[in-house]
Length: 477
Image 1: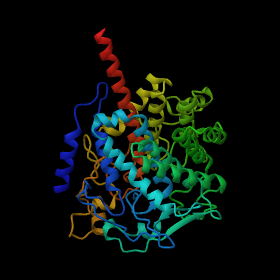
Image 2: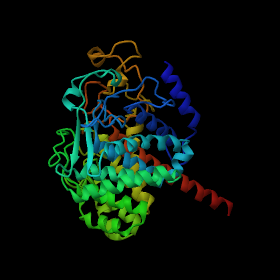
Image 3: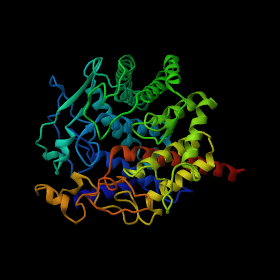
Image 4: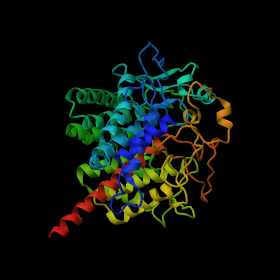
């Protein structure tokens, strides 16, 4: 198959032996993860597109006044562009790219990952159609899910949904501001583009801060029940923290510290950033992101404590149960996603000197489960006996001009396209898993599933490289 030969050639060109201390080849995983995100691209694809079974799609995506809303990522195995998980995923990937650039450089993937995160950033700037206006979603989930076929073959009407001062959505707007602020750091070598990203980030943050509300409630965006939001202060916290990192303006730092409520998150995800900013249940899912960011900025133990409390839940003996083979199992739907996100928390904290040996070891074990320690890989195109029937419309379709429809959904045959790098949902609480296309709970893929997973791999690779360098210097003495 042409696409398989091309991709394998690309991957082999950048992959070498695993880093010292790593059981699995982290370079290969980083390389393949960027390929997964390329397969999720919507809009007009560039000439350098590496996924040859993908083409231009959804070229009619427009705002309510005809604004161009092409671009962005398709969410999962479907073709809706959900703004909140897209923004969280892009922010989390960009975070890893900024803080662990050396891992991507060594893997030969730095430019590919820059291209990866630029794709949704360009889309978010398009979606910001006026100072206090932002398109949070394109596509009707019900109509979209009724269609099985290629994105390139979609014929259904794709409505767009707008937030405004009277219909606010501080969660998705704030998270998009965070992504663009982080992007302004990554692209600082391009002064004009970096300034453009930062301008949009500041305006979006002001919009989210001034006109507060939840996008699926006050904003009226029909993302429920798929991506119902429960909070927005965590997203504002992360946005303010990234704006401080981008500008050194202490107004943003004071805002971020004010949004942090000291909560302990329940499971880091697109709906919970406090562990990013710390971590919590329901309205406490991304605080851990904000707390990690604030600890990195201030080194204040106030922000370290909730991160440690979060990890105490997830370590053996905590409140999170484990499968018999060792996966920390929080929820049935996308169980790998929660463990991978917590592995990112652990690896990020470890890289900042918080319980380094313990947290690094735990992250390696959780990611190891997904990469093959369970007896098979949960990552498409990687390792031993990986998934071949993942729930993904495009991957299930043969090369054109062959038709694609319900027959491709129902066939027991493997997907004809290899969706390299995609992490599938994961097992049940007793390690039960079947590689079946119809199982969207355990075998679908999603942009948010891969985000924490990828940045965790980058953090571990960074630490392995640091340890290798220290060992080399020690041997020279």
